[in-house]
Image 1 (spheres, chains in turn green, yellow):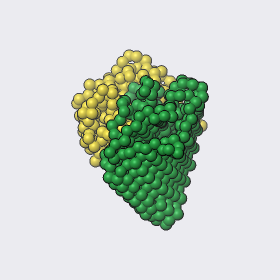
Image 2: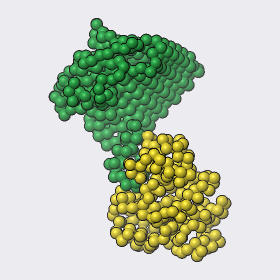
Image 3: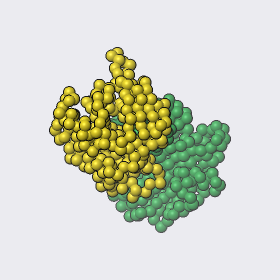
Image 4: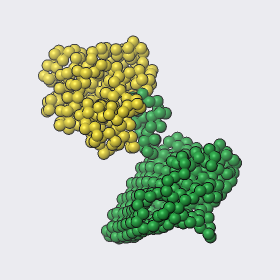
Length: 305
Length: 242
């Protein structure tokens, strides 16, 4: 692994070396390392690019890292990763994609991640996107996450895209069974002429299922962001979505939250707020000795922390 | 240390109003309280010292240096602190972050806790909380004051620290200022309507209708104020002018 790849690995998975536990590192379309453990088995798919990850029932406090690195300009790939998480598991899954594009052609990674979460299982899923490189070629990432949650399961999904991705179209679809709970936290910053669209579809099918979809984003320069969330309450359930965006310069942000109650006992809330940094916030930090630019940076960093 | 020379602030609207009218004021005392009726120009004056509002006429000198054209940041770095009447809220920035921004990044968690304790907050309950709407008005106020104490500057300006807090919190706040009066190394200017705060001031300045109506020691000024020389007086809880 060269220095650029190591940097990408650190950015997307906070890894300096190969991780402890199970992992699969995909680099420029090929496997650059894979390890299964006693409880977590990683098997390459035979009919299409991607892997199946089988986590045995009752696996606790274990993690899987599946970073994707791309440094070859013009590479385009579509990868299918399926996670089969057994009953009563408590695991952390760290995915992420780093693209370094030093050339003129578009590099594009599209990953379709499907989660099958067993009864009472608890999953923390972390996904980071990062782009770098001085080339004129675009860095494109289009992740799709499909989640199927069994009774009383819990999933926490943290997605972060802070730098260097020119275009992203994220789709997340989730179906929740009885008592299942899904928490999604998205953090997004776009700059330059970047475009980012996120789509969340959550079906609260089971009794007492619940979801909380929280998006915090900052749009700088001439970038564009669109946030869609669709929560369908199909049973006695609770759903909440929140989109909070800071707009700067000539950026454009659209937020379209949709909540649909198909059941008398569905309780659904959406909140959306878009605004520039409040002048008084800048002034307060300037009275502490920060310049306007430093104040702006502190406010943005705090907001996306 | 601070001198306002012929300061005026004129608002250009349909009625065209003079908020401040040829103010001349020297501040050298350790603890100066500025009081007077609402709308009299006190907050405007405080914001002018911090650089948030620019005067339409006149000059401001800080330690002999003309700072009239200086930015908020430059004045802050020169040694001026300002506590907002309505503390600003931030999503994601914690109490610790804010105190560190005030005191410098090297400040330890223990150091930050010390400043919170000084304003009567149980530090460990607050240090990692966000400075957002989940904090009450009184809590925000005290955190605001803690950021000013943490900076430890030559001149600290407090704009109506008592505004918007309940009586119980106010009792504690008074203690904070009494302590500050005894311990401060720098000079304090405080905009206030509260008798108990005026009572610890070395000098009281009365501003009404954009002009300095009176200046003097508390012995000289307080009796007149308490006798209702200003046009309105509510004395509940020691409040001279609500």
